Image 1 (cartoon, rainbow, N blue to C red):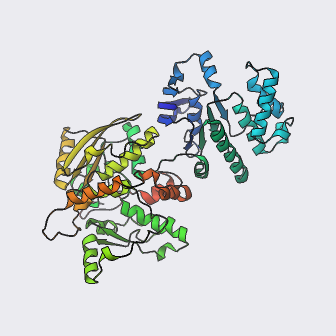
Image 2: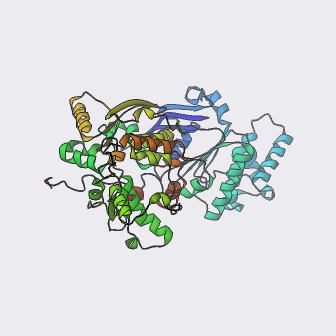
Image 3: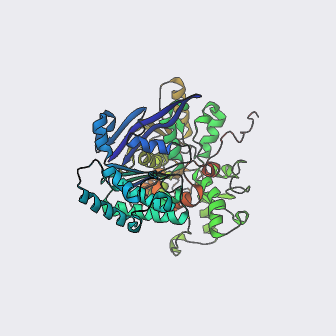
Length: 519
């Protein structure tokens, strides 16, 4: 296993310090293909070179099989590096040496006999499909053939880990596919852990085992790992009643709100962009109707800055669940008797994390599930955050996320509790990193647009328990495992917090004014 703990790399330049890598925490499991994706200049190459200490981190720890490379002397480090192969974007072959000689080079100082070296080189040439190019020089090879030689050379010392620094970016699409197929073969047949950095989502899609997806979880982790850049706590922003409360009562905290749109508005923006494109429809011809337990959602969809997909409102109409019930009764429709039909695709697949959004604590729960995965590389127990569930108006907890530290969180429902929490924050009596607020007691399940029971009883608690019960039996319980969300990013958005994702899925809460608000 490879572990990076709080790894940073800073370069001294004429214009000051350049932070190429900052506070990176990763866990890469043995035998997996782990992708690191990002735009040019994001520090991907620097990070991968930190794994074998070709670039020595300015701070942090690099552990391979629980051995901290930062503690090794040069002699021991050279021994460890023999088990870490590396291939490069531009191949780095010796032009004056043949294919055979390039592959033989790392074997020169081994204890293998000449015959043993020849046998190994022959088997590697067969593996990469270049047996007939044994005596050719790099100048006589295509780009794909050069990369195959580089892979063979990297495998010569029987490494446990193969680092691939933009190994396909200099190749055409067809050749890229052949190299990815070869890397997959190496991984499956030899059990080698592969760390692959790229700026191409298509490469991640084709070969990598994992990719983590979620905007609000991504935003929180970015803020949490760069604490000095932000004011705290970060507040959720999916409840429009709460957002309006902050803007009118405590405007100083507007910048503390997450910029992620509510699920309603995210869906509308995606429906009139990605979905429209997927079905070949004009987005202006798509009419989005949202069924919500919340009355405030009607005003949210009418905000002037909720028109990011095509210029039309991203959500056209909001009906409350109470209004839907009245419509059913008026038309004498009994939902229980209707035939079940599947949801449309794409965007028809849900997860347990999505279901629990409707109950107090659910937004926090879903975000932490994915934030944990993003930091540690592995999923938590989906019920690990149960302490924030339940009908108490103000709940707080501290959760330890390995590699990130202790996260202090609070969950409140009801604006009276929200006011009390903010007053404690202002007085210095409370300190949190992440706070979920719902205007309605119990969360959306207790929304003002919900049907009223015949006995006029409050049903938020029972409804919330039903949602968590549905979550427990779902085959998918994590947002980042939703295949259609992955496809959305892979085929359209690119990656979390990309320029397109920022435009469609995020918003500026100062982009609209409350009645009486200056400006």
